[in-house]
Image (cartoon, rainbow, N blue to C red; front, side, top):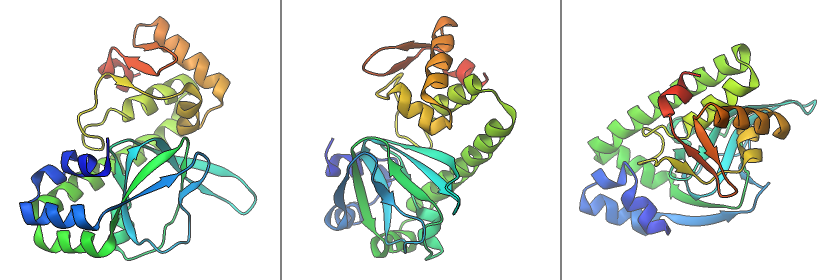
Length: 221
């Protein structure tokens, strides 16, 4: 998928007027971020609304002592940063590429112009921010209340949220180690959790990724 296809097929892009979409296509740019590098860094002024054309990433915060906690994951097709842009603020978290990523960047000026001119775009932002708030609350509860298997199950299910990612299918191209990082558990625990979920018939594992067979059970795990 290229940048233009990602923009035109996005949940919000499909609802833009022709002139609005034309400006988005003109102003947006693509940036490549290698695995392990920062997509955004805490303290930087937010200048773009960001989406993943391909790849995986995670948002996290860290302390001066080196401790880190994961906030949420970022998957292909997802957009983030709208809250920080609306506040004209600085990033309050780090977003790091877990594999090589292609990032779509929409300038703040274009983002603000869409907010001022497009009612469907504003509706989409409301849905997106509500979904993300629900995701953050669920992640906090999972971290405090659930064992590693349930945390992995819920993290995987979160990648199939249609309000955050457009038209998710049943298969996702993700490595077990990447899912462990997103869920905040070790690679070994992520592997054991996924094997247990496979034994229970919820998923199938392969070298290419993970096939989800029972999303409702995964969400309720």
